[in-house]
Amino acid sequence: MNYLKIYSLNLYSYVLFAIYSAVCIPLLVLFVAFMSIFLGRRRTMKLYRRAIAWWSRGILLLPFPFVKVRYENNSGDTTGEPYIFVCNHRSFSDGFLMAVLPVEGVQVVNIWPFRIPVIGFFARKSGYLNIRMMQTEEFFDKAAELLRDNVSIIFFPEGTRSGSRKMGNFHSSAFRLALKSQAPIVPLCISGSENIPPKGSLLLRPGTIRIRRLRAITWSEYNGWSVVTLKNRVREIIGNELALMEQGA
Image (tube, rainbow, N blue to C red):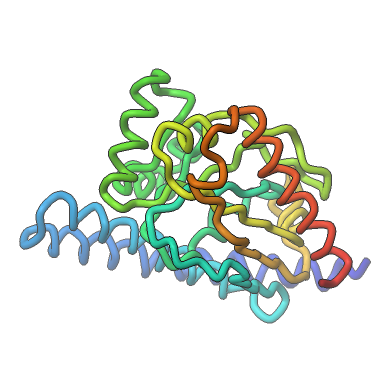
């Protein structure tokens, strides 16, 4: 392993990240604050979600060409928004990768993103759902309201990043919401992020991250399934596709 190359990549990336964020974040906040004078609450929320996506897309470009991100849309979907996206979770960077999705969406996150000054600010303003700090019914009510407003919801149902190619067990919240809302479920496969950066480290390594969007599972298909059946079926679909991706398919 070429440690000089890795440390050079990290110095380069994090210096650019600091400069980029110092310039971009104040500009985005001022822009959204100014536009909110003319927009209603719903359109302001949408603009905040776009702003966090714009910032995140820039972050994905910073370590290029050492780290490359490829979004592959294999869905062929014609169902239309909103969707419930279900993703495997290998790295801290996975949340930023969701900026590649061409939808208005919010993520279901743990407590820690809300505690990070910049990320927490945008997460709160964008209406991200903190599943650990909400009562169950409150969570499902807010999630259902977002779906009615045509906002997609992004889940990492493992709950914590695996840090490897081994996928953990799925929690049930995404699938309970699907059965309540009848929204289409989109499996999303993330390959290559497990070392960008590794779990427990902020040290980036060179590589290619692939995000592959699969065909939506519609209500007409999963109607009548139990939560467990739906959860296991989606996990199986993601696992099978990841195996193909890591064989080079």
